[in-house]
Amino acid sequence: MSDGPAHGHDFDTVYADVDKGCATTRFTWRDTDDGLGVVVEGHCPQCRGRTAREFRRALPGTGAKGLPGWLRRGAPRPETDEEVLRAERYFCACGHPHPNRPAETYPGRVGCGASWTLGEVDRSDGSGT
Amino acid sequence: MNLESDRRWDQLADELEFTQLGELRRQAEGWRSGLTGLAALLSVLVVLKGRDDLAGLPATARVVASGLLALAFLLLVAGSVLATRAAHGRMGDRSQLLGGQALRRWTVRELDRLAGALRRAAFCCCAGILLAAAAVAVAWSTTESAPDHLVRVGTTTGERCGALLPSGPDTVVLGVGATDGGATERVVLPGPTVTSVTPVSSCPAQG
Image (cartoon, rainbow over all chains, first blue to last red; front, side, top):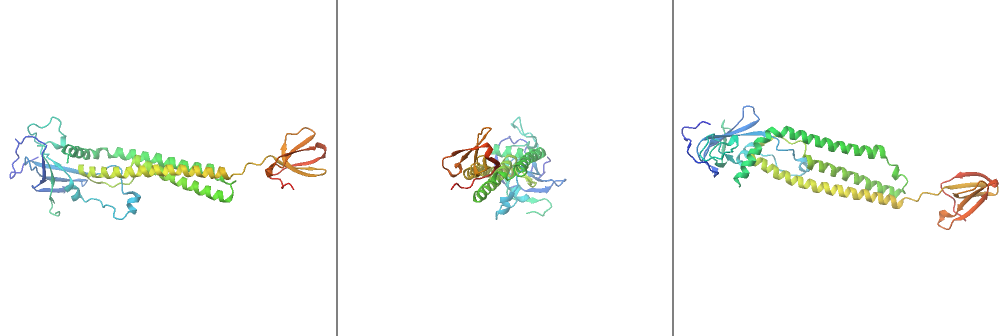
């Protein structure tokens, strides 16, 4: 992860499981190069390191609307990508081994331990909200 | 929200991409087994068993028993499909953007759907078995008892009709009057007078 000069990654931030609530920093999303997912990018509201989270398109399991769902009026429509992204919880993945971090950290989530949700997320080409 | 729980869902969603092919294959195998079993059941019932068991029933009982059996069969098939769906998931899902929270919401919905499918499967199977038992009860209660070994014996003095009883070398012994519910009269016909013995399904009422 590279730091944006305007943000200034605070490498000394001590690792902590902190819920930062709804992030006020700007996040953007774009399709992955292979078109099979999206990447949400921005800066961690805690340590201000640049963080990115990739979501892949996949089968959640083995489920579908099924016949009752087809017959039932008002069945829930599938969520849009942006709705999914807004409902997610994001964990800092700045890549920096902050002090006091646990010995076992999920490889894709190395950071300061902070988490947040997104209030607004813009598509990086400017076509989103 | 529990952060640790959210973190685990997040990691689980990450891993899903690498396991879904195996999951789909297991699902396909489960559905293949379920559908093969159903096809075998249908073949046995329709092709091998046939409808001969109901052919001897009175018309009304035959209609009732056939209807009960048909309904029982449909319920058992539905129950089997629902149980297969509960065990192996539903076919035809679409790929979607998966994050931890999306996976968690999907899991909650799927748990709800599975519980419903299990309840319906249990109901269908129990109702199917009850209806099949009712059809058997109808068949048993309305099937007439098999006739005795009735024969019509022609003699030089006329004909007698009755159940053929153990007879000697020079006599033919009939049980007469058993079909009308009364006491059986044992009639011994001398062998030389007997001109013919013909199996019959019923005897005329005794005057």
